Image (cartoon, rainbow, N blue to C red; front, side):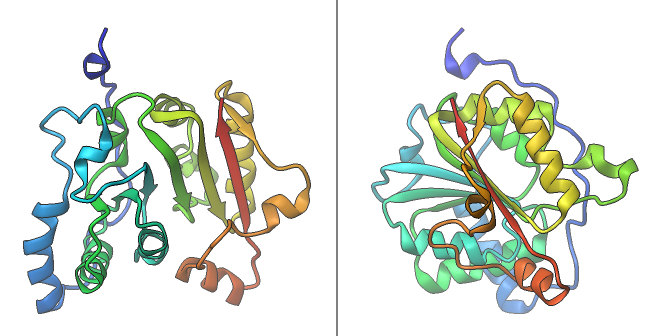
Length: 233
């Protein structure tokens, strides 16, 4: 079976809001102009080399799932001009804010998708991604909703398929139950190794970490954060 013939499993239901308050005129115009130009076309086969997705040369490709307002993704795209970034965010207002920043800064190393991230994961070629970032995802704090959390056995299978050997999955959260949930799920998965050697490794933000508004809110509310890095075997 060739890479482009891999079977696509049904995606899980997307839970969460897709739209908030009406977009400002400039945001709406930006969405109309930029989203079609930057959105991944999942109706066509993914290129065997993801560098072909970008109009500038890139040495590696990273995927950020649920980028929110895009602070982290914008920072990384500026910081690492030779890295291609794929950002997934279903919330319309967040996507509009992000695209406005991309336009203002003239970023060329970014592609986006505005729907279910599992669709992107199933579309990507095997061993094509260098790093996956899942930062402050919706924690679904009620036990009856834990099954909605993005970290799951089936999604870790998806991560394992698309990550290159030695690639990384980086997770950040201020919710203890989700941190423990992620450690348990990744610990049970044969493809992932937690890279922490001592407590400071998971209490210290990732190198070059710019902070996010979710993190700032957690600090204001007295919650600390954990920063977990797993390596794909």
